[in-house]
Length: 110
Length: 117
Image (cartoon, rainbow over all chains, first blue to last red; front, side):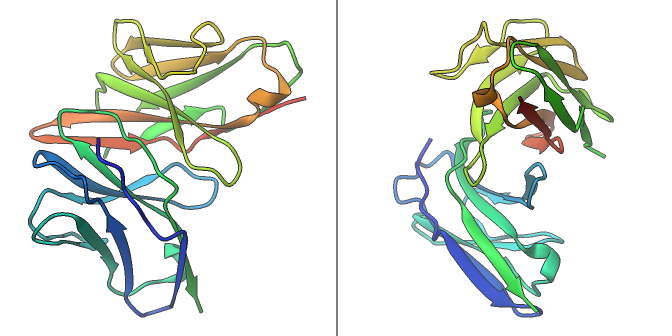
């Protein structure tokens, strides 16, 4: 599975959009981009995933560049409860394993 | 739906004892479950993959005789830390794969914090 690179930390103001970038320049054609988050002392929570098209659900939007070498997770209106570590993971759909990198620690400020 | 539970949520034990952690998928059947370990301020590290009715597959560097995994049913996997020592103190998290349609989503339990004195 391809490796990902994320900034170690970010912050944003409550109510504003949080845009979390992820680089995955070695991604291959059959690998998906997954996003999970982990709130302190809890298990990770699935957010969204995509292959090449942009995706949106009730939690977030995922924007994948046309060359698929990077993506951005967008939380449209961040709340204090969105403070967490966000993990971007690249994985083949047939590979069940999730290999976590160091993630981005997002702090939402009041 | 897709809830995974773990029991206990927190356990403190003496060095040398064994500790069993249960992971259950409450509203779906999970053919595959995973066990992770997380040390403070670090990311999750995959320990092993557990398939129902077969032996677990351990990641490199994880001692299979120390971390015994049993996946006896489609809704239950157990991790036993044998002869625990203080360095085994960690946050243990399980996840379960829900194979529905084309999705391979994994759902995580809330974690078990193990402290070995």
